[in-house]
Image (cartoon, rainbow, N blue to C red; front, side):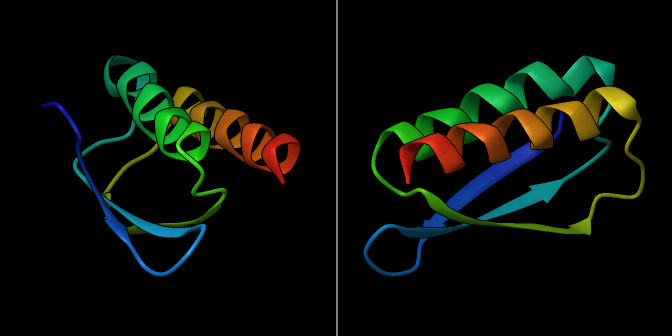
Length: 75
């Protein structure tokens, strides 16, 4: 199952990313790309809502850490 990523602006430079589905090897690259695009678009304060993510493996966690690094560099 592909993870669904919905990004909602929440003020200047701030966005909330709602994820739904499994964050694993199959979906991590898509999540990383989508959230990195959000940071590159100027929303470098990113809140990631994982309330609807029932499972994450190390690939998913790695994707989130990669986005964190990108946000820190953009700030």
